[in-house]
Length: 268
Ligand SMILES: [Fe+2]
Ligand SMILES: [Fe+2]
Image (cartoon, rainbow, N blue to C red; front, side, top):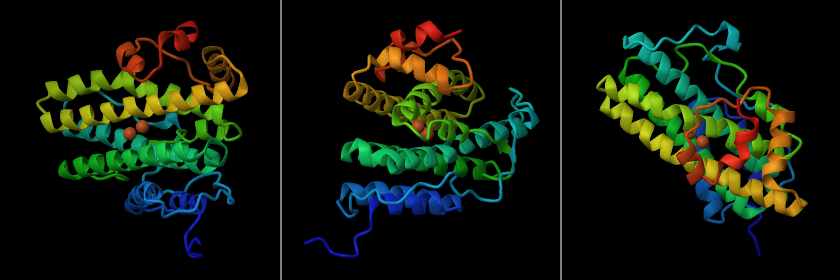
């Protein structure tokens, strides 16, 4: 018989989403992945996910148009702005992965939950590494304003796991694969070897995240009798407001299972 005090996984995920403190959220995401793997959580999806996860008072969130322009120079201020922007993306990525597991885990099954809780734990590590990097530079997460709007994609796709997978891992995280190599080169050229190592590690993990998203998207298509490439295009056109911009990191995308026949026809 199961002990009565084992917590339901969706309940635990909801708790992590509603944790505002960044470090408490990091610890909660890592504990969730560990506890799910160890069979310490009941597979119960009887609670709903919050519309918006909890976040700390700082950073102040600004609309994209209000964000100060990021320059590419090598001053300490510019470098801090880069690492702060990356830390914010990773912070939101923790919640995106948690919401994926908690909202759609019931219909998608145990492997899906394990995969996205592992992604949440990776994002938590990425965030922690970037915050530590900021602290070494005399700053910290929350010291600068950050981009509001990263949660928009989650809101827009909260009704459908296929739409969520099409937009979050397969458009937004895949975009990370396209832009990270240039950032990495710039960081390396500035002599910041430690920074370059951090970005290399993140890039490797993100290839895996895109692969997980693509695999579960293809599964979802098979269950619905859809052709993945065609269905993906329809979903992206309907639910993603931005544009898919070249140049693409085709080799990283391909190693994540995202071949050109997905994105070629709608790229500009
Ligand atoms: Fe990440
Ligand atoms: Fe990721």
